[in-house]
Amino acid sequence: MKQPPRQRPYKDERDEQIETHSRSAALDFVVAATQILTIMCLIKGNSAWKGSLALLFIGGAVSLFINMISMRKSHISRLVYVWGLLV
Image 1 (cartoon, rainbow, N blue to C red):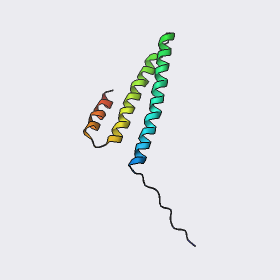
Image 2: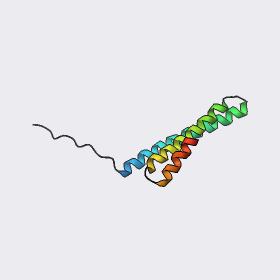
Image 3: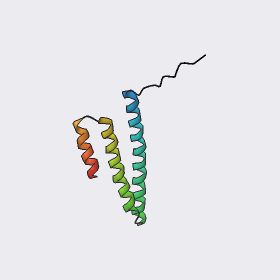
Image 4: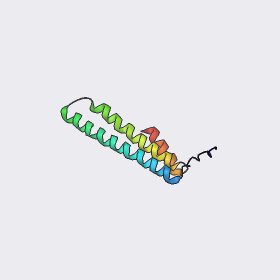
């Protein structure tokens, strides 16, 4: 006896919001850890603070890009996209 093919669940708007929120939460953790690393390097006099500061700016750009993906069709998304490219 053949089993009917399994229907794959489709992604709805709520699933997309959960996925966007989880990406944002993980990125917030990385940004916080990088801020701590930057401050520690500045206090110790280590020159690695320049690289960690660059990571902070990259994290900010990624955060804006994630927000742009979640907003897709709004006018604000174009502004966020341009700002992400500039940063």
